Figure 1 (cartoon, rainbow, N blue to C red):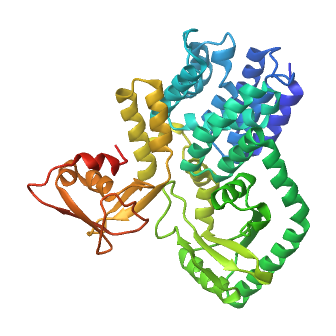
Figure 2 (cartoon, rainbow, N blue to C red):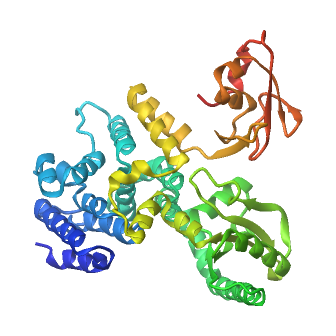
Figure 3 (cartoon, rainbow, N blue to C red):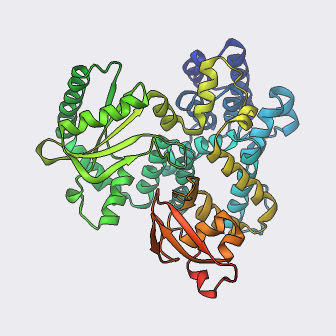
Length: 475
């Protein structure tokens, strides 16, 4: 029915898959086209454009395996067509069927409000994710295309969707390490929620683009020449402007006008080893002076989403402030694909790229997320409570602090020594009398800082105090 659209998609993805996998993807595309039939998007375009766009993101931007791409093509057939789970399983297998059902919205009683219905759908999706992680990658790809076409929605509804995207989906993409998707979701949300602000920043960047491009090319050339002088080979150097939403947040947090925000430009240097990363920091600092307090070592202390890189902010030529990120090719792959880098690696290594192999992935962070989701499955009954948990715990930025024995403890930003104590053990928390950070006594309610060594002083006869409720933030 939409042969040209199907063939266009297939031609793009063919090179990424074996012949057997390609045939399965082709069958899924044709089946989705058949089932959606004459359905239209809000834009008036054939509905099949949407599942094709979702599958294209999965295949080309995230390099996902065959079953996940098939599920992306089929993600709306159970919900929006006459197709049944049994038919999908018979044609494409149990794994594809489970993925499709994991993304499918909950069928809700009509008396439920839209917000409660949506919360239930998100709850169902997260529970499915705890069993089969690619569910969330499909949902994020689905959300991305819907956000790209949000202009065709009713304006009030579009703003609700954009707000939910900022609350749930953009932080989730960040938590799963898919940085480019987080940035695009944030920008698309800002464009809908604050169009004047979005256009103002975009116009400013456009007016400066020629100047920025010329400047960044000079910076890249200087770094490349310095790498050659120091015998470093196979070094890749890229440059960028910060994305619109991040610039907006800088303006908001610092209460400054756009022309007062100076750290808009960035350079990324990709090398071959961790040793070269630290060598490159020295090279960059020889070229331009670093700004005090602006060096971050995410290699020694990775972010909660497994992101690793060295960040340094320098005072570049003509007084321009510039952030330089330095990382290995492997770290760059993880920063680009996030959790999906697992499938990228397996595909490139020739291993079986089965979505079920997710459970074998050696990642403490993702294991923690999955464990939390599974606990929600049995513990959380109310949608409102669940949404608060999602926003407040799973998607919150985190810090790492250490016990005196060197054990790293992950806590949400804003956590206190009491949170740390109760994370170690309930009895440690119950008998806390004081705390030290890096050897210095601190108030029990003082927020902890990243990489501090925290020591809890306890006494056997100590008991919790009612005032602690103000200081403890984690559950």
